[in-house]
Image 1 (spheres, helix red, strand yellow):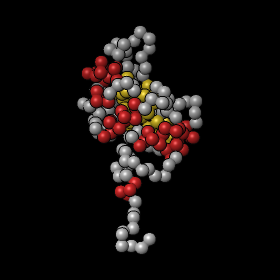
Image 2 (cartoon, one colour; image 1 turned 90 degrees about the vertical axis):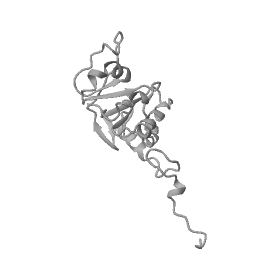
Image 3 (cartoon, helix red, strand yellow; image 1 turned 135 degrees about the horizontal axis):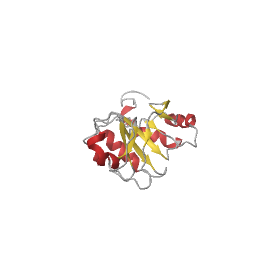
Image 4 (cartoon, one colour; image 1 turned 30 degrees about the vertical axis):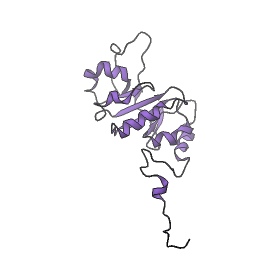
Length: 175
């Protein structure tokens, strides 16, 4: 069974990522039983049937918009965001919008070309699960979550900038 990083631990992945085969369409593909992460297009085409299942997650391609799920974020247990290549940063914005604007509370998973160097920054925008590339060490990737001890900027995981969190001596105190 494949392993992923979830909530800063390596765990077994019980979800299957559904991809359309050649000739299949979003409306006609059969979604198997069990935990399935379906493309956003499949969710949109088969929502009336799929929304009754508790074992369905949705994955969003980097050229799709998270807002298409605004009515569904409260009921989906998992949303995955695909990174087709590591240099495609659109997934960062998708994740941040899911957490801050759409208030998604479930598992937010980065999938695709996910590398160790990205994990620290991916968690900053709201990801809590990572399906790293299979040709890389997942144990090494886990270390990427702790590459830095503190951050300057605000983001999903830190609401105050460093200058607001740092203790400074008052003007009257000698330094």
